[in-house]
Image (cartoon, rainbow, N blue to C red):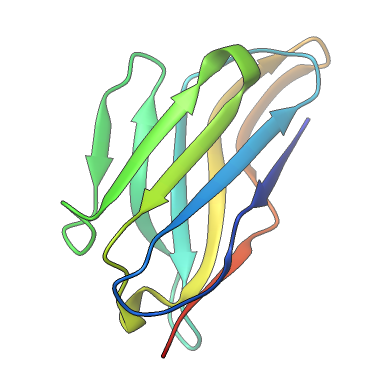
Length: 120
């Protein structure tokens, strides 16, 4: 079981990016998934989470600008980021709280991270 994040890159302030995170490994279900980020010299922080029934939660700093979603049919998590600011610059990590797969049960699984840089 693994999570593979993609979609990061360099974008100008005010621009948009969409991150994706594919969960693979004969997965039956995942309860909660989320995006976290870590800026240089800072601790990792929550960006947004989404449960299997679609309930979402956002950090105050991204409310109204970021949208988290998931496609259960293909075990993929997304983060649509609009109106990006320089302070959004960070490595973004996807996380799965509890994964039930053919290979067993896994908890607190992290992807490898994808770098988002917001700069002019």
